[in-house]
Amino acid sequence: MARWLGLSQAQLSRIENGPAVVHLDRLAHWAQLLQIPARLLWFALPADHEGGKTISFAGVGKPSLRSTRNNREINPNADLAGTRDHQRQGARDEHLNFVRSLRLADRRVGGGHLYATVTTYLAGRVAEPVPVGASTPGKAALAAAASLNEMAGWMAHDSGAAGPARRHLGEALTLAEKSHDHHLVAQIHAGLSHLANHCGDARGALFHARNGLEHLRQAPSHGRLQARLLAMQARGLAIGGQPVDATRALADAEASLHKPITGASEWLSPFDVTSFAIEAARCLLRVGDLAESQRRLQAALAVSPADRVRSRALAQLMLVTVLLGKGQIDEACVATHAVLDEIAGLGSGIIIDQLQHASILFGSHAKACAEVPPLLDRLRDTIHERSWIGTVGELRSGAIGDEQLG
Image 1 (cartoon, helix red, strand yellow):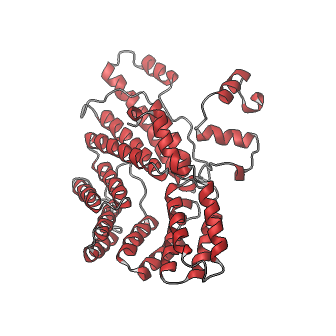
Image 2 (cartoon, rainbow, N blue to C red):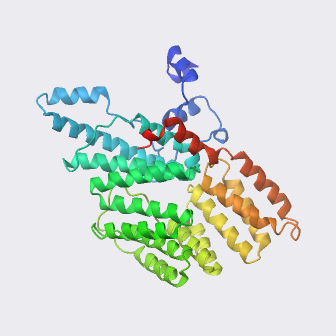
Image 3 (spheres, one colour):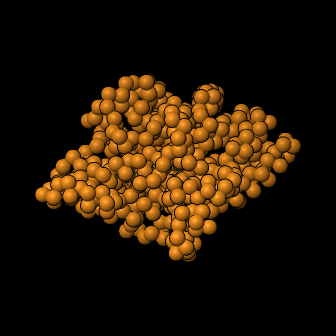
């Protein structure tokens, strides 16, 4: 076994008896060597659609000893500040690759599987305090740390860990503000607004959406980020019982979606028409416009790529809610079965919440429609099989300790 994996027996023994391996490159490489069927794996690395290559998680982490030694040999008289800036720049590049790769993996397998990877990466980082405004690499290091904490917050949210999600995003906001990356600050405010909306906190959602828009005014134009913040504002208004203002804000968001992007932080996450359609449908469902919500969700599903497993599942389950609200029970059953067929490898607390909601809605139709009882059984089994997702985030945060969350 060790020879197959290219390891010594001692290395293999340490892996077998040590902590769980969370590096996806290593896991994928071993799975391929051992010819483990893909259906038995919890993870699936995404493909680079342009080049058809697998996105790599390798090389992510601290600068290697060899690269540090070579830098000193090339420039032995470099001052300490310059050396630190050079190391921060190297670490920033590695963090950026890590964040982008994990975002792609997250689309397919969900935060329930990946939260441990992010928290382990964060806990294992050895970073010196960065003087605010000291240098461009110093600010880049702050932005990198902010983005890593932002990702951890989203993973925690998708793992059912609300407290850690808020703490990660709060730390991300503090770091991003120190980095003076206004796009990143605005994006993190959008994330905090989303969490507040998810908890029914209209006031908090509007506070963060408006603060994000204020930061965005200090940065180059970015239509999609503006649309995201306006969509969060629309949801907050809808939750707060202001349907007219919510509809107006949603229209402004849709108009912003097509505005030009004159500059962008490298740490921004994608926000496209599918993402917007989901946020718009959430708002429209809240104000009671089922027809428009259905139209937007169906249009988004028609163009959404298959590798966006969680986004597609979320849109389909929201469509189920719409169909049930319109009394189209048979269509809702078909759509729910389709979702359950597609999410076999997905670990997402958000999707489990939606499945539980669907189960409640279907319950009132169990006697009137013969298709519903077997569907309820399948929903119950699926929710039970993924019961670990609701606790993994809290367990993980407890395992690493609150002081390590940042």
